[in-house]
Amino acid sequence: MHEYSELDAFETGDMDLEDRQALRRVAGLSTELQDVSEVEYRQLRLERVVLVGVWTSGTAEDADNSLLELKLLAETAGSQVLDGLIQRRQKPDPATYIGSGKALELRDVVESSGADTVICDGELTPGQLRQLEDIVKVKVIDRTALILDIFAQHAKSREGKAQVELAQLSYLLPRLRGWGGNLSRQVGGRAAGGVGIGGRGPGETKIELDRRRIRERMSKLRRQISGMSTSRETMRHRRQRREVPAVAIAGYTNAGKSSLLNRVTGAGVLVEDALFATLDPTVRRARTPEGRLFTIADTVGFVRHLPHQLVEAFRSTLEEVADADLILHVVDGSHPDPEGQLAAVREVFADIDGASDIPEIVVINKADAADQEVLDRIARRERDSIVVSARTGKGIPALMQLIEERLPRLDHEVHLLVPYERGDLISRAHKEGEVLSVDHVEDGTILHARVLPSLSQELLRVGKPVERVS
Image 1: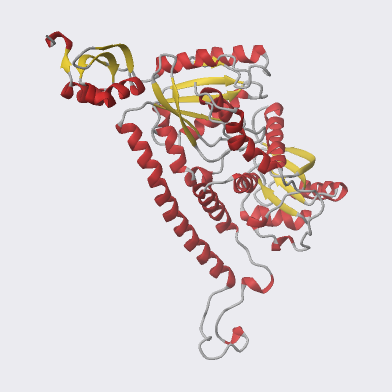
Image 2: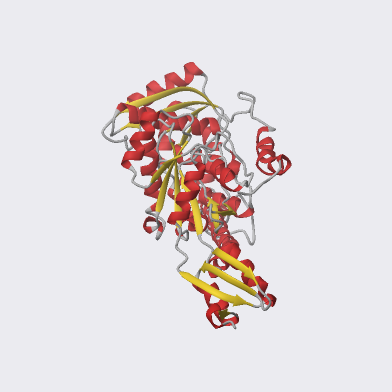
């Protein structure tokens, strides 16, 4: 395992965490607009909120867990949660999500608690958002908007910011609305209020102009993301050409993926007890107990009902999972519903071409905080699973041994005399293969190793079989 100093750790993840915690929102100090329709989506700043969910299927415990997760999402976005309400219905009301009578009750709760935002546990249609806002008289945000807002706060890299903006605009476009005269204001003709020569004509409404600008911006972002993903593909192809095995860490948000990466490689990436703490993928090198080199990539976390806009925007990032030789599927053993986490992540895997066919090891993390009965239950259900604690290091050696066994095998055994001037090939055998023995003689180095096909061919071109050495 890689050794790293405390200074290295501070310069990476610890410094990121310190920056993120340096400035916190203070609830109740913002100037709220009187007309909720004037709130622009990309300027959302959630503060004192009431949560509301519709329970359509499953048990009451499932409904409570879903609202509890919404609470964690709201707190991650910087909100203070005042109250949470669940309504039992066969399906959400098409007009107001919870029904007109319950919407009036929600308005009373909002007024009595002093909340300035309502967050709904689902993706609302533009009509539902508008009608519910008209009744409760405060901002109404759905689960998708909340997740997109968190992503916008946490994106750091240029690619990550572009991906989040594309997802936001994709969500905003069908929900765009004007207010007052902006819905019908024309740019040309007599309605323009005497613009005069050069200003007459049918013109565009303000909302049409905004939609066109958003579509143009989305096209530009798609081109930028396509260009930025080229460098990622180049690095990925270089690793594939050298045939270095790739491992991807995937799983539910806050399951401990970054902590596991740090424990295995000493990467020192940001670790925070918050949902979607890290968005940008990190690729690091690591070695198996027998010394075999492989790459391990930390990917963006998943969540129940992950907005499809994000899956589409982050497709180039999620390709790290599809191109891996092995997936470490991390699940939080201390979570109230770990089986639900596993199902939600596999639902996203189904949207990534080829990801469902890759060998998977279920890593049940946070063993130090989990109930042993729950750990045993998951281990019985998941055939390829292992219990670890990234915080304490428990189970990590066994995990590394399991990775060794599951990686593609080195099926070419060589026993050659390699000239001293080709020491680079000996070095590659140590890095990429499994060296069984090395013996330095007068004419060169006698190498006995198991290597991948490409390296085997290069060694055979420059080396001599040991049996022919006089």
